[in-house]
Length: 366
Image 1: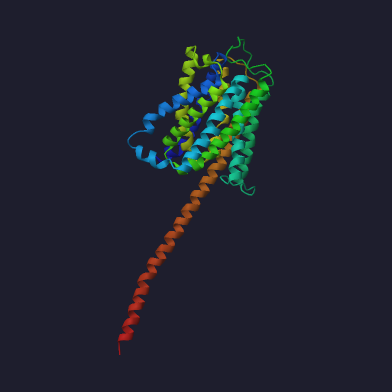
Image 2: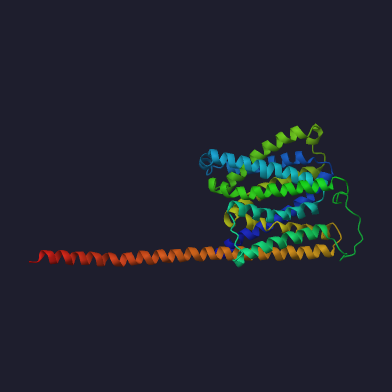
């Protein structure tokens, strides 16, 4: 069981990347079908909140629900929802609408580098060029980001020559809004990195990840609704006109409830950088899905970028594994030192008592 529990964070993060890749492709199709990005965020967060209500308000959690929401916890969750959920998702899905699903998943690969920098600034990650594991984390981060950007920006020659009719839903936008979409996706990556960093103090204030996920989804629903009412003047935008739009909102809402819980749990177990380093996999998975099922063309740049992403990912995971191993060895060494000290004290106490008794007897004898 110990071995399986050690691999659960890896399994959970890989599953999340599959979900994120499918969400990018699915949502892109719904947005081009007429779904408003701001309204979509509201529906997504609302469905996620309703999904979490039965678990968050169960009898076992009612007491912790009252205890965990102190003033500091309330402020942290509200601020995290505003930056890491409301601002992040509105920027991401608006950028997804203006750009493409490939650009969205590729731009999210900046998150590892941004998270690494932020974690180093606040002290969650230590940077020492004399340590091999720290060098591995730096090189792996650069390799991951470079590989992902190579996939998105450098096409090169075709590897597979296939005749197909381009999909109306998945064709990248060629309008002047492309640069705006990339800027919004970049802003979304910054917001998402902030969300990951802020999970560390939230986990210490509220260890129950289901509760923290519920409150963040609840606050984000209210914040997103206020923003959508101010931004979206057309009331017809709130009506879902097709099964594609409805199913996309349902899938995204339930998916975010599950993904937030897995994400917060993995961050509490392995740290924000470890979780952020799995994001490049979404770009690789998106490319595989679009080539296999959407019959998109595969280029040399995509293959080289995918190799770079996977190589960089495992370099960073190796460095992180070495760090965890060193921490465990240090803890075991400290425990052994404590046992040696306690055993030496136990051995000395009888000797001291015997010596004191001998001294007392010598004083009593004439």
